[in-house]
Image 1 (spheres, rainbow, N blue to C red):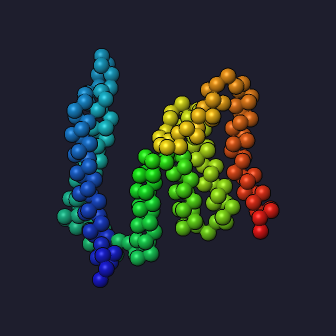
Image 2: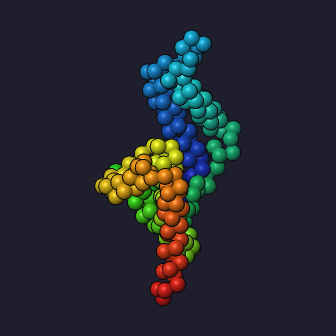
Image 3: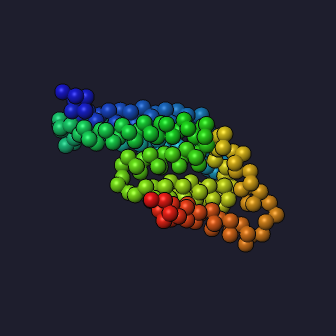
Length: 204
């Protein structure tokens, strides 16, 4: 019997409930280090929302654990496998690829890491064409960059790729007119689609 079949629905329920309960207690402890009160004079404390959201989650997990002990929930008596072998494979690949993405962000930066992650993920899990995968993998980081860096003015980690963005910042924050900035954005967003079209048209 493999580890996949041994991990039943019953074990999954109690495992997740206990882990969430411990996480809730940890979040409550950290939140309580800040002010968790809310008054008209002092407004909401920094730890108010995190503390009481964690408290609510902890209460829910206690209810789940209690129902499990008393065998009052369908899951507490279900000894069927929680996940089959095929699904376990997909979940494992997803978790591993996300871990690699997190580490790659610290080195390559989020935008280039996202390109490789999306290309791999779509190639592995979907039956989309190579042109769609290439187009989507390039366009998504571009739109992410424009949303955070240009609209919200929130810089995201860029790692060793940061110097490549300096010319882009010159256009976005320099003396260029708003019209030229929008032209630049439109051309940037449409470029991946144009490159994919030309590749499909002339490269057999």
